[in-house]
Image (tube, rainbow over all chains, first blue to last red; front, side, top):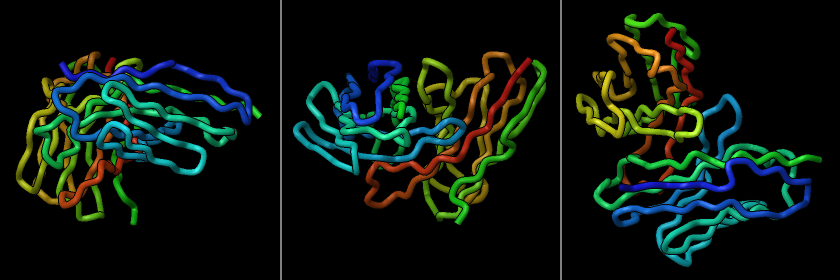
Length: 113
Length: 114
């Protein structure tokens, strides 16, 4: 069964304190792994797509990496505005171009000034 | 552009009542989706559509029906609401060609079934 597990469930950081969020997955052939950000009361917002082990993507203070079994979202010197829930999702082979994604339960990040 | 718009944003139903959630997108996307989000469960796909007049089941389709009569609209119906359908519902859309993984989500519809 395809599955995505994120850890920790919640993370509190001080402003400037770097850390990583983990996304472990099991999928019958990975087509892509995706990271989304979700602010309270809003819909998820796309961040990154990773396709193969060893791939990395960066955006401002965020860097996503991928191995054969997990992905990490590294947050360098976070600011309070980085506070949000970060969602990881995978797409299995055979899904074509459709957004039939399997989501993890998310990690809620709080960055205190 | 408004992007993806969902109506209503909030609704309270009694068990057994029916209702329809409307999703509209103005990006001319081929694909549209309905997900539900529950605490500790993550987002789960209910139904999706790959074009006008087409629909397909997702991971948790039971108790829901959908229709895509127009390309820009995707309707989610509950014929006989149950407390287990209390959730936040998100509509999303995506383009077909050269898709990079980006789903465009609406702001959600919070449904409570008493």
